[in-house]
Image (cartoon, rainbow, N blue to C red; front, side, top):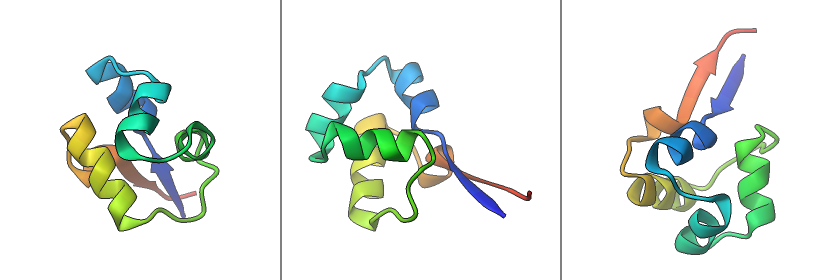
Length: 68
């Protein structure tokens, strides 16, 4: 099973850069890059909440599940 992180899609829809988003939610650009590139093994609920607040979306807009 695979959980995919679709932050890049939401960022494009909201026309926000990675640098601006990382600054707004309080994580490093490197950590945001790890999330965007599906390299993260976990995500804190506080980070997910901040992403949803800044991108104006729901967790299901950011995370998706696909069977391998």
